[in-house]
Length: 235
Ligand SMILES: NC(=O)c1ccc[n+]([C@@H]2O[C@H](COP(=O)([O-])OP(=O)(O)OC[C@H]3O[C@@H](n4cnc5c(N)ncnc54)[C@H](OP(=O)(O)O)[C@@H]3O)[C@@H](O)[C@H]2O)c1
Image (cartoon, rainbow, N blue to C red; front, side):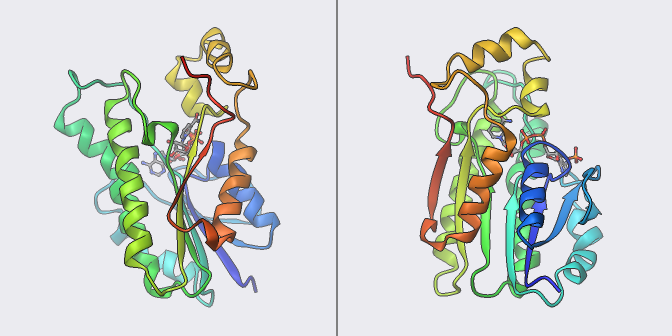
């Protein structure tokens, strides 16, 4: 039986899929929560829609059974929702929807698992460069990712003495469906984004996955905001 478990949200593709594979290959039992299943062997998938305000009631029991017997649990809050909106167009419905997936669901998932999380467990949040700065037309996303840093910092403070550590890993432009969709699939826009990075390329999902693994397994990072963006060129 595995002595360690990863509970990850959004492991069906992109950064989450890379992280699920990496933790699995490192001997973790991996439990993924997302709507679609990862195309990956050796992963337990629990169909979950984090935008459903009743999602915890639907899956709590199954999740608790999946981690039974393991007390070293890493949670990676990776699922995210990125919409196009601005301070002039965003409305309450959009804000509630984005906050539900990006902030409320992580807080709820923590509460399902914390009672069974022992020493050396970890809670890792996936933020964004936009957790500490803003660009145009991502209002709800920027607000939610800033809030996630607050959730991470309060996680650090509220779990004093429990030997559970936390961090917020903030990726830069990473080659995934989320980024492709955001630019409308236009390769020239992706190329232009890459040219604003010091290495003149996008980040591979596995590069972020390795940082997530480092953060999950090194308690010294407790309370940190870790920017992993290959160096963005400032203007
Ligand atoms: N790519 C980037 O450039 C970039 C930059 C900074 C930060 N990030 C952050 O990195 C994280 C992963 O992003 P990614 O680029 O890998 O995106 P992605 O390829 O679009 O994957 C997003 C994941 O989130 C899951 N998800 C979305 N809505 C969900 C819902 N309602 N319920 C359950 N799961 C849901 C998706 O699963 P299903 O569709 O199967 O439910 C999918 O597995 C996100 O938090 C994102 O904000 C990405």
